[in-house]
Image (cartoon, rainbow, N blue to C red; front, side):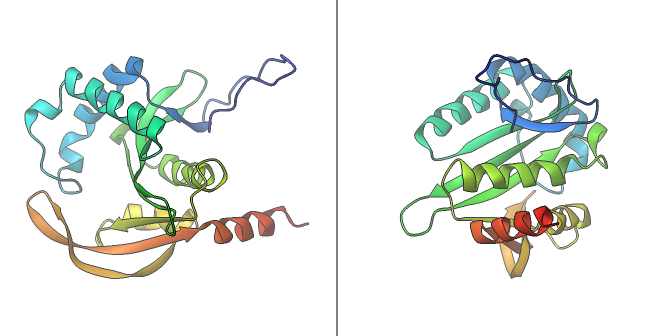
Length: 202
């Protein structure tokens, strides 16, 4: 998460050029989000539901951001931009969707990293930070993700972020007009806590 200003009023140190962080998408980010989607459209057509041309417009991106802000206020959905460096370059988007409370306390994780920023560790770092937000700030207990078996980059991202494989769901989601199989991943708050304790131990 993007850190808040310290209570003592001290200024934050300058960000490293390659630092990756999350913050909620705002209306001012709509143009950058649109350009990132347009630059990545052809690369992602095989990984996402079929979308009409109207989706790739500034008004549609503004509407999506506004819906995300409203859902976050309700605690039903959390959407963040994946930003990089001191200039806050928008590198992608990550979403915790279908938030369930009660006895489940679960959400789905979905993300995309724009083509110009792929291979820089943005996806892995974003998933890790989103998991910390989910468990430490949003009060969730479990996150799950679904990845197509041939999407090797996203499979690696989930594994490097500490998610475990739970199995294969056949014909799980309709992607670009085809019912695709998906590998299911999950992570619980206890697993994140153990992982962080192991990394902090001398």
